[in-house]
Image (cartoon, helix red, strand yellow):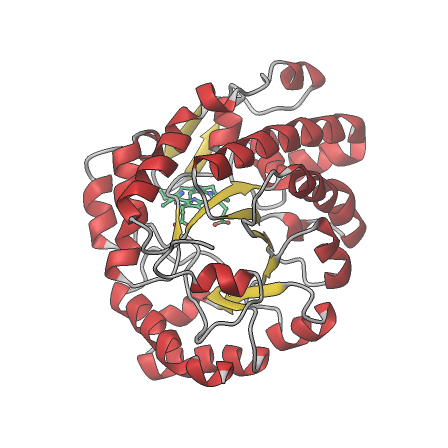
Amino acid sequence: MSNLKNDLFLRACRQEQVERTPVWMMRQAGRYLPEYRAVRAKSDFITMCKTPELAAEVTIQPVDLIGVDAAILFSDILVIPMAMGMHLEMIESKGPVFHKPIRTSGDAKALKKIEVEKDLKYVLDAVRLTKQELNNRVPLIGFSGSPWTLLTYMVEGKGSKNFSEVKKMIYNNPELAHSLLDKIADAVTDYLNAKIEAGCDAIQIFDTWGGILTQDEFFEFSHEYITKIVSGLKRKNEPVIVFAKGVYYKFKRQIKCGCDVLGLDWTMDIGRVRTRVNDKVALQGNLDPTILYAHKNVIAEKALEIMQSYGQGNGHIFNLGHGILPDVPPENAKFLVDFIKEASYEFHK
Ligand code: CP3
């Protein structure tokens, strides 16, 4: 039994009875909130990640301001490559940049094995402080990137359009790609186990770039390593959510990774996916994040369509189909959350 005051999110992840659908938003701790920008104005992004007080403060903002049913730790997937020794720079208006990307087996050998308690102590301290400050109001989600999504950044060195460098690696030197993915999977497993140990109530694995692969490649280069991580987790009953953006096929095979929840992007039909997986896992999603630009009646209509598509019963966690966009009006985000809280009762009668 948890001592959380609001454990709707965890119950929905486990497909247990809930009286209404829980709701949170990917990237909810971020720039659309003026309160986030006020903290961010005083420190750069990496300093914020490395300062537990600041990370805890912005993690809790959407709980207080928007009323979401779960908090997600403010951090970044790229803390793993940083801990492995890569130098990260967050360039304003350009995003993350590694000036020395991994291209050869020599580069790969230079990556160090991480010691989570030492190299990523700042994340674990942020988890502990956030749990304390949340005071059991809502569960705290810890996350990591999937090995494949981390590899794309480590090899490309920055955001990419065609992913030419990482694709060259999987075609021309698949052994190197596999050995890197294996090394990253081990690091992520240790990292997520430490986050659970520090107090995270659930885990989400972001496979933001799973969808740039062919179907066979997805299972070979991404799913395989997600499976390795999930099977290596030491959990009491913390649920695992896997969000593989753009991976709209073979859902029954996808859930063999051992996840409790599959995260869906907005191109997927949540009701059809529910039928495909036959209620073996819970589903999270999947409102198009750009709907939050629309008038409130449109937001309500589209959100209701998703709940109707999922249908009656447990196992739905309402979310966006990807991260909330930085120029969305916060009142629209609040409207969505309030709407789900009111309108979802009728799906749980
Ligand atoms: O969801 C949350 O609120 C928790 C915080 C969170 C951040 N990044 C904060 C962040 C999470 C879960 C992430 C994950 C992340 N980071 C992903 C996977 C999820 C996804 O959205 O696909 C990826 C691919 C990254 C890498 C990353 N970090 C990029 C590409 C960028 C720049 C793009 C951008 O939005 O500016 C970041 C920076 C980043 N991570 C910001 C935040 C709030 C913006 C930084 C700022 O304040 O300037």
